[in-house]
Length: 400
Length: 153
Image 1 (cartoon, chains in turn cyan, yellow):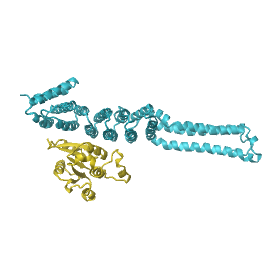
Image 2 (cartoon, rainbow over the protein chains, first blue to last red; image 1 turned 90 degrees about the vertical axis):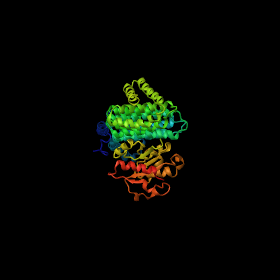
Image 3 (cartoon, rainbow over the protein chains, first blue to last red; image 1 turned 90 degrees about the horizontal axis):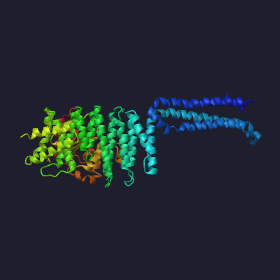
Image 4 (cartoon, one colour; image 1 turned 135 degrees about the vertical axis):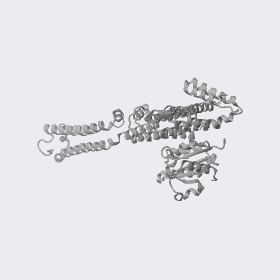
């Protein structure tokens, strides 16, 4: 009970009691959110949270401390000399009441806000980092290193599922913003860094739990970035770096999905990868990995995708460019590996070869050269299994 | 080699409910299948590549691009229709390479629910509309694609 009009008002005893109550209150309103914070937020995110969203606590603490100090000052500084004696009876009780209401209101508001915000800490963090990164870019035409690092931390630490999808949506917003920057200021290296260190990492990180929706979202962001760059750039040579990054990310996601036995995500990765230029190697790696793990369907899809590209460029007497030759090597390597499985798989491989080899009936030497080059290519990169498979296929087809 | 049908099938269920039909397409020698799972992905593929046949599901998700915002704001659900309307309507000039492409619709809805498909600018042939049913066999679907390929738009 506050005794405003008693003889002890603002005396030493009154002040020590008031200070005790105030300290208890401050400890309560600071302590409860801290407890909630410890309970709800993952260990790895605490530093990021404190840096990005934790500033309010110290501000509140300083304000509360300041208000309590004012009460102490009122009792120790002789204000009454400057105040009309008629107003003196109401001045001190009114000031103390206003200060106490301010302390209580600020404390209560902070408590309620902390309770409400503890439910979506990860979402708030994702939004805050993306907002900070955009703000920094607007001022400096670059992304702050700390923002990229924090995105990487979130990519690793966030739970898979809805929370990670929200994080990926924020990454998408950031990438979209950077893509819409005028071409002379656009930094494809930066976009590539966000794609590999945040988007791709969030679904391929070792400790990440598997979630099909997250995989799909990550692939969508990669695919959209590629399409956007292709259709909104004029003569931009730096986009080849981005294509390589996107291709590598898609391959990694596909392989990760394969290890988690998520066939739809693997097939989605194959499909999206096939729409990107010069990714025959990544497609081969994905198809080969699928065969190693006993999944034939992704390998079949890769063979059909590469086969379509091979069909468009190959023919007797045609000179193949380097990239087209590589596509042929990877296609033939995978067909050879399917062929050596025997049975129905062999039948499928023979049907795929039929269209290509039949064209070279009158130019057997040309196709034999391509077979030898393919073997040589895989031997050079120590893919001995594939080199042997191509050799066996050559023997099976051209034994005579 | 012109007898191979280059197909783009756009459906968000391709990697789930429609897996068997999708795989069956890979096994057909005369079909080169490509797939897209939302309107944005399909739009960008159609802008760069020629296709002989394009099969669209009407209830597609829009995907990432802002170009669908006007449809989004009016709570529009049929982004397959929005895609067809865009490709064959206002932005037709950007899709000259699709002048010989045949379009078909494979969707859960009935033909009567979508009369706008058969009017300008889409002018879909009635036989190029097929309703999805759980009993629709893979071979029947492949025949539908061949039928669309031979049709006149």
